[in-house]
Image (tube, rainbow, N blue to C red; front, side):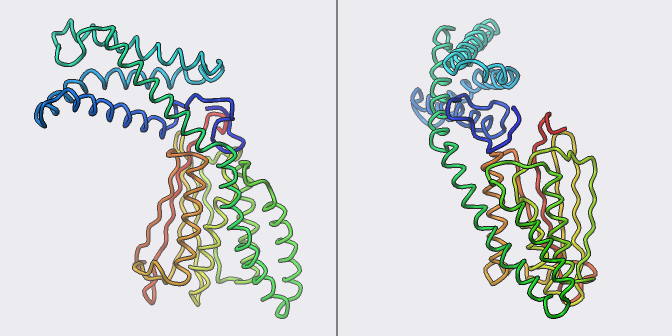
Length: 355
């Protein structure tokens, strides 16, 4: 996939799916197998016969499908440079050729039940399936057009900004009377943060900028909380130039401060670890909290869940199924007063241009 500077969706003129995208691959696998199951159902006379028909058909369909996916993933960048009609023609021709070839091989091996007896019929069936899937992806891209996705991203980011502004101003107001000098420093930090927040939410930004934003935010909170807030960073082989969605980590840190550290009288430590493993970036964050794991609907917990849902949806808009966000709440072994540890794990794909 080429470099992504904005949302992941193709420009309006491009209608070929990205065959290296995990979500595209899974949808193709599911779609082809559903078509095979439907074809077997039409040809069968009962449940047992349907199962027999489907197993036989799958023995021919799966090798064709998997080899087609591998080849399309390899030549995908080349296809994207061609006119859309030419790319579609090559895809249909390639799939049809593979289907006819495997039909011949299966016949030579004596597996008559596993493929149509006529290679031409096999090629025609494969072509119809390829055209159907290409049509599905074209309609899906139109439904999730860049304009719609960008509007959704702006709406999601707009939910975060007022919340961040409200909490940040409260932090500064709490310092004005107690320590005017620290309040002035906090206002300077806040002004710099707002400058970053005013960026276009549709554009990805370097990971180094997101980390810098998080450090500035934590410095602002540390002015307010003092030694009650401790932060430990661990960066391992992090691709600083990797482009990530804006405000991906800051809302998680805000949750860690307001739902975790602040309610605890003695405070606590937020731990962040960013590490690249192969073509994946793993982000782990943990913080102590006093929330009951069963309390999902009350007060602050609902705000926490809303922020997590917001980030999940934005990751899906940018990366489809290639990214994920997981959370876990577990008791602390040495925790006091029923303290727990809240963990967040984010996985992002690393592109070759990010390394």
